[in-house]
Image 1: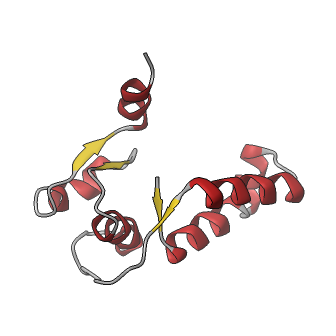
Image 2 (image 1 turned 90 degrees about the vertical axis):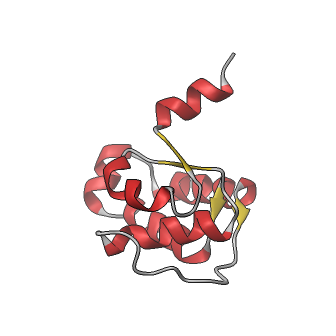
Length: 106
């Protein structure tokens, strides 16, 4: 799993929103632990090149930039429609979370 500093900060901000906190039910302490574990095991990516604009939703640009700068083979998302135009240009496969789980489970 690849992550850049802006992408990690965005995911953390989203997980701390009241509606998301209600959905996941984690305490501040448990959320901090989850984020620390994620940060430890994710591969850090330096954003050397910015490829904007590539996508119709500017909020998705940092996800694509992290994948491209990190040399990802695939981009895993539930939002395939927004990423589809860019995956061919950058030779990325587009997977759903289910595709990912199927690829790592026997």
